Length: 303
Ligand SMILES: NC(=O)c1ccc[n+]([C@@H]2O[C@H](COP(=O)([O-])OP(=O)(O)OC[C@H]3O[C@@H](n4cnc5c(N)ncnc54)[C@H](OP(=O)(O)O)[C@@H]3O)[C@@H](O)[C@H]2O)c1
Image (cartoon, rainbow, N blue to C red; front, side, top):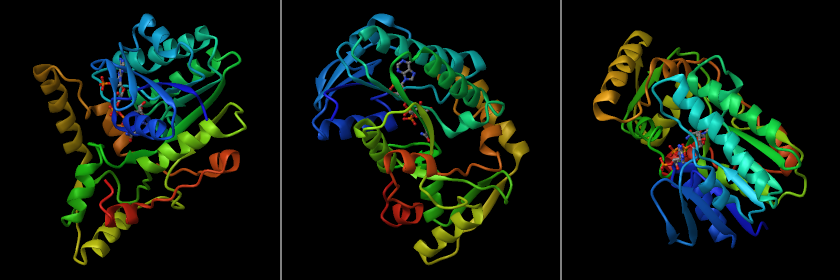
């Protein structure tokens, strides 16, 4: 087991779960945060941002593993995603190399990186992967491309699933679209397994809950209906309406001074017709298999 793990994104949904798991496994966890400092819940917080080489040097000093999970998932334009995701990742890798102790670097990318042309976010995640790989030197890099992640602490998919269990499914995009999901506990288990695996060949892994062919909207409605033992009504949200909401949301983001989640660029991701993927490569490489299907998670309210 790694002795010292440097973690970015530890204050976020996925990074928070990774931090808790690493502490529970007995690792020394040093985590970057824009707001926290000191030692809390067994985590040593380093205050700073992805833009600060000084904070990143402090974060990575003496670490033998770096898990880079910070990233912008909301933004107004291509530059804001580029700065946080591409430049930010480059700086974290640079700090890891300068530390002289880092042997492994796990980069949390996204399945969206498979389609860089789709959105600002997708392009930034793809470009970040290239940056990390090209700057790695002797450090062994693992790139995780999870599909949509859900579970305790998530705010993006939670409303969709809550409404589904109340009998309403808001359908975005075509009825024929294929979706996929992965529970955060399974993703975190994959992170731990990768850190502990003897092989560390640089590789990129797509990650989902393993449901072959993913889920159609009809499948989601059926899961919801089975759990409720009552009907689920599908409500199709037209792309035109989605784009109008995205425009309004962008305008409001200036008023409330918060980066928007829904933009016209994001709509392209939401209506993309095929978000399925295969765990074959990661299972072969480190033996990880997901344990939690969406049906089980919804049944047991694991979200
Ligand atoms: N959630 C998903 O479905 C999903 C799917 C595939 C891939 N991913 C990837 O997984 C990673 C984590 O996503 P998440 O869902 O956990 O998002 P999240 O809850 O929004 O967390 C993002 C984290 O990144 C940190 N961060 C962002 N910009 C930063 C900066 N400039 N300097 C320092 N820290 C910064 C945030 O810090 P603050 O707390 O200070 O804001 C937060 O800790 C991202 O790289 C995302 O692209 C997520």
